[in-house]
Image: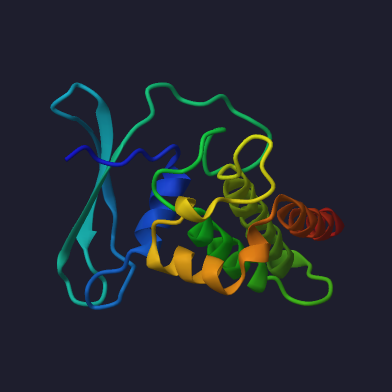
Length: 180
């Protein structure tokens, strides 16, 4: 089986965080290495013992053939949609990060955490948008391949419309600019 493509280390770590051990714990001391696959492609392998039960965990992700250029700001990947997470999972990630931002103004360490969370929330929303076909108005129902992604789409399909995603992104980006 060919390992799935991880476009960035951040995407690989997020995927591992979202796929806990059978005991329910997602944390494990991650040791990473670059390995050659049978087809000659390179991959990142992460191994370590689960922090909850000690079971060995291993994840292997194919690396992109070329490293993307350094763009402005934090990104989970290039212009293509993720192969690791579906649009519903990305929207849940955005919700989680945005939910970590305290109401009102934040300064010092709280401000730094708020900026980091909003930066990741915006990047996750950008990932959802990559699943909208060119000229399309919304993410297609067949783009969801995880249970949690399909459930969110079933409950709230309007959240996957291009205009609504843009409005939420604009609101998060506005809060981010207020935080400095």
